[in-house]
Image 1 (cartoon, one colour):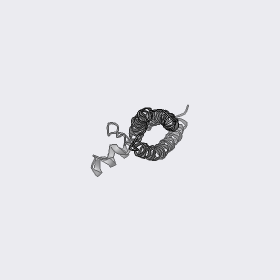
Image 2 (tube, helix red, strand yellow):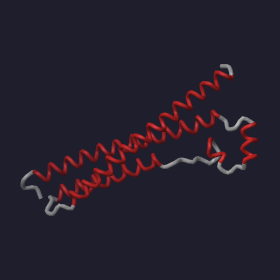
Image 3 (cartoon, one colour):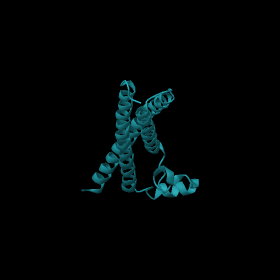
Image 4 (tube, one colour):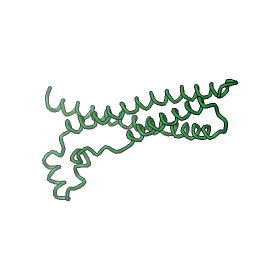
Length: 155
């Protein structure tokens, strides 16, 4: 593959990965809002007096599971600065003269930038997938706790 084609492909793939990173953060933000609201409701219901013990246990487990999902989603939103030398971060500690020299020498390696961004996107999606699985478990636990709470005679 000619160098110009390769550079174009790397640039196109980098743009695609950047779009996926934006999507991942949007998904994480939406899920974080849902999980935060669900945790509020779960904790409020846990405060209801005379809930059957199985319902309290299911609710407590749902709250803990939900909190872990919130932690995973917060990780997705946490900035990953890597080693601080790639992309725009590499300019943060440079003087104006150093920036001009780096730009004149070709700047940063686009392939390395693509590899970093692709790895970051993958890690974010792995955490989102795990959080979604935990949130599905929360739904099941809440349904279980609700079912136990409405069944007469269960204490």
